Image (cartoon, helix red, strand yellow):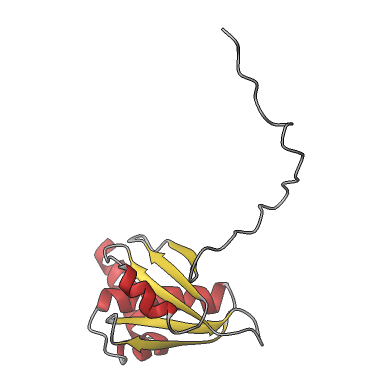
Length: 146
């Protein structure tokens, strides 16, 4: 019964127009195409990104996704990376040299997605929400003298 359920689950994916478009890019790695499709669904259905399209990268033998987080914002590149696949500095440099902001999306075997923003150089993160600067000395613990 469980096998029939899995087969039914995967058949709708293979018939989805976006999945077929990604397969037609012919990158040769069906696991990476499947990961790209999961990220595509997350970006378009959950996060409501605009103009999301798949682009083949011959250098990486992968499907990249390009889209806009909101209408009128610049295009961002998303690199869907299945958990079994490794990424090198050369791969990241290849994508960063495109000039667009980049997100790396690790796709776990259970379909969990983890996004990481990548940039050329160091990037200072935004401060956490609800944290206020209360001075340098307030939260320091004093050492116990023995």
